[in-house]
Length: 134
Image (cartoon, rainbow, N blue to C red; front, side, top):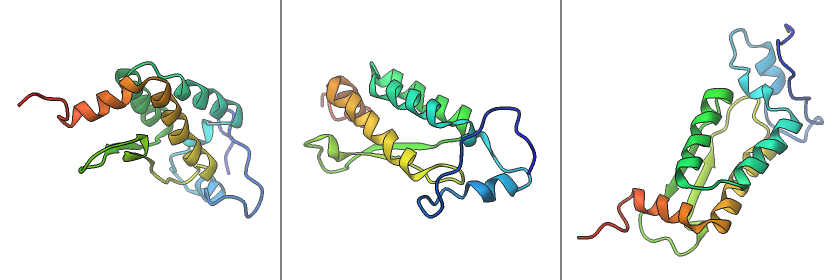
């Protein structure tokens, strides 16, 4: 196990998480970018995601999460109809080193933003052509 050139996330208590942090640390050439997300940085990330201002802002954050941490998000709408925000699926893809609590916190934060700013949800729906005129 080599020393990282940046602060890394402390390990979760044994048995409380399935993040495979130790296996990632031992893997030669493993993508350890996710370990940069310390608990303090996670709080800042969640706060930032709770305060999104637009769909463009959401897409920007989605791209930054992938570039900086390797975290992949899938945000999709139901092909049938969306009556509430629950009809918008926000999935944080599993990856070694990503804590299950973080995988849960990111979608919750994005949903809070959509509740505060419904235009983000409307923009997502419009990406699929919902509001296009025939």
